[in-house]
Amino acid sequence: WIWSPQHRAGTVPQATCYFRKTIALPPARDASLAVAADDRFRLYVNGRFVGQGNADEGIRVFDIAQRLRDGDNASAIKVVNLEGGTAGLAARLTVVDNQRKTSAYVTDESWKASLSTSLFWNRNAFSDSRWKAARSLGAFANFTVEQSGSESTKSEPKTEVAQLPAPTPAQ
Image (tube, rainbow, N blue to C red):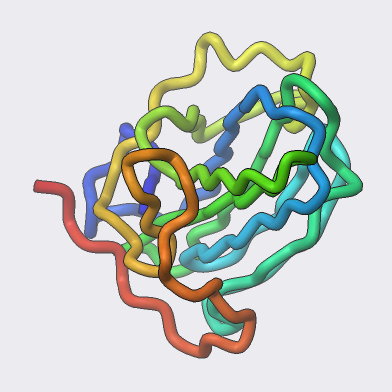
């Protein structure tokens, strides 16, 4: 789970937080992005709207293979915390390249976060250099990745998950 560094875990007000991550990828034959958020989210890849979801729906998995390109790819997620208290975003990008090598990337402190944004924030060309590194709130067990960078042996998350564990306070 991640959130804005301006808020401490468990004391997040009603707020909207924007997240970005740019990853250089080889040509992909298959790719999915699984997202869980407290309370609701909108997902963009390379500036194009992919889908949305909310905490009641659990983990949402999106097929994004057709949205990726060879080289830099931007994932951008807007998360709205409606009730205050706890808030968080957990996401996992899984990519199978043309050599059938599987790589997985999860939300962590390398993602950028901002409580405000501007036009084109979800596009590749947007400069997030003034955005802060996201604050880690703890691991989301369904999205673990082995240290080698290859996919773990856990089964893929399902979209029918009904309940999400609350983000745990950062130590």
